[in-house]
Image (cartoon, rainbow, N blue to C red; front, side):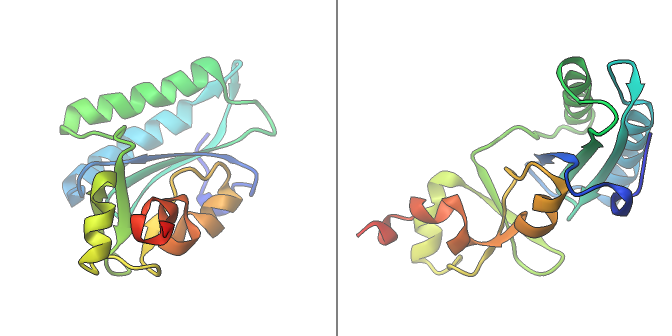
Length: 166
């Protein structure tokens, strides 16, 4: 069953899928319908999942599940991955490129770069230690709210900058 994000408990499980490009408003409208339809019918162990699904920054699909009623595993996770793969095909997107890093350009605009470009961007001052990056490894709603958007210096990525390893 679909719930607003505010009604999801802090320990709700989170999955973040990052698109390889910015989504158009038309795409967002269509995707929101697909996501909401999925979450409304999402089940785990034949029980309705109290869930949330939404799009953030015209780039991320975020799914949440409150596991206090039913643990989301196996088939119920497979169903969510199928949804993302269907969206990928329908809109010619890639949500599974883990080597792309997304960062904030402004409060509402995000950009991305290949992990292999991090040293070049650092040297050109395109990014710095205070650049806000998206930590898609968060696992709960509480982490999502506090640790999804973090300064580069506080992320695992900072150690990848060769300048810092002297």
